[in-house]
Length: 89
Image (tube, rainbow, N blue to C red; front, side):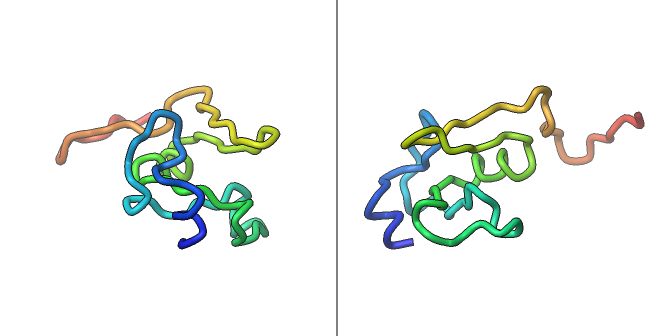
């Protein structure tokens, strides 16, 4: 994490200003699929944006020297108030 702090000062999501201390390392190539835990494969993402990638259908891919954040084709996550029921499909 120290090397991420040296390279980045905020969450890497475009427009996010959450400080690096509020982030967790995200594996661009998922660790569960063989991705390495080295600096070129890690990006700091805040909790909200990390969740969008893992549960919300967003993708992070390498694009040349940078990264591209790709939105899902359709909404995957939705917010509900506590106690609000889901409709059966």
